[in-house]
Amino acid sequence: MKNRIVYVNEQEADAVKAEALQKENVFFAELDGRSIQTEADYVREMELVMNCPYEKSDMYLKLGWYHDWICELLWLGEKDVVLLLRGYDFMLRNNEKTKKRIVEDFEEITLPWWEGEVIGHMVGGKPRSFMVYLEGKAS
Image (cartoon, rainbow, N blue to C red; front, side):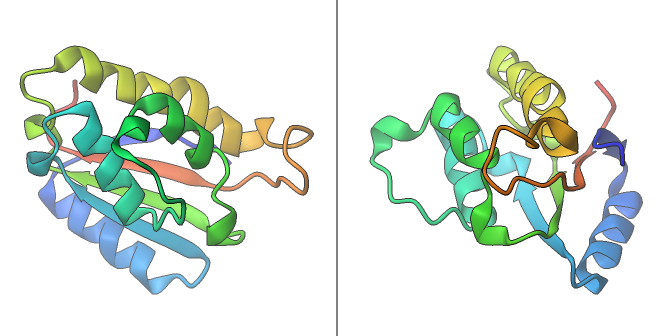
């Protein structure tokens, strides 16, 4: 299993969504990059689409808190994850630094964690497929 980020066009994104929704062992989440213009917007949207069950105040709308639960996902059972970010080119248009950090966090933290680092670091932790699809131009 190789967890990774894949840049896709609109038609490919539609195909990814259709395929993911047909599989019972896959949790599918879709974001709209047009509605994400701040770090807090991103964390809030991720909490929503990932069905994060934790109640938080606005002070937790930072990437640090997000890292805690995105590397847990107990509420999803053992399902694989497919995350589709539509309109990626429009996401964080005035904050390229945060946008770049989010992608780097997937590459350096989230995807390696679910690919195998979870073993031995989380009680009962098992690897899972975690694919991120960014609809737009490859950066």
